[in-house]
Each structure stands twice: as structure tokens, then as C-alpha cells.
Length: 112
Image (tube, rainbow, N blue to C red; front, side, top):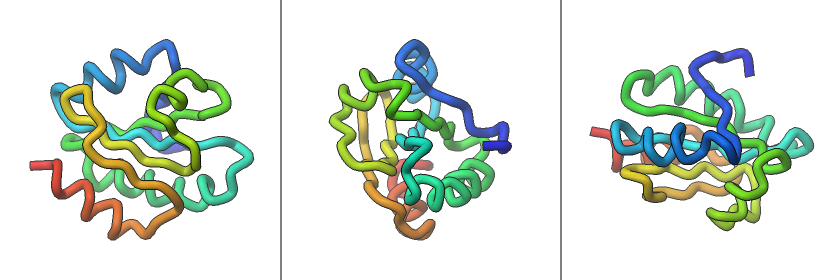
């Protein structure tokens, strides 16, 4: 995760960095784990999206092994899972290592 446009979410900062921040602009959280091969396959796509939507979308990564409360709160059972938050609510959920086009199509519905 060398791309510094992607911040790390955890149980301590989730409220401020994701829920509260999503009142100003949409926040996409990538729920992942170190041992998850599909998560590593999706990581470059998430980095591209963070770059492409800079200023319009905040992108966060959340390691489910380190932030179990947040993962459990949103019933994340399969990873990778991308959740898009707007005004403190989940407005989009994408599960699996999906093509970039599928993610951007979902994002376009929520980003003005």
C-alpha cells in the first residue's frame, strides 16, 4: 500500500474517518486481509480508483483481522468487500475481486 491517497481505517477511527467523513464526500472502504489472495489482486484496482477519483471520493482500507468490530458491524463475511458510505450509511456493496468497470459503474451512481 505505497499509495498514500489510501488511508487505513480501524475500529478506533472508523466513526470519524468513514462515517462522519462520508457526510462531506463518499467514502469507499476496502475490507481485506493479509492472507486473502483475491484482496491482493484487487488492491491495484482500488489504488487506481483512489487516484482516478481523487477529490471526489475518499478511499480507505480496513484489515478485517485487525478491525473485527467494524467488519462485524457491517456483516462483512466474504473478502474482499468494498462498501461505499454516503451520509453515514452504506449505499453500495461489492463483494469479490471484480473488474474495475463494475466498481466504477457503482461509484458513478453516487458521485456527482
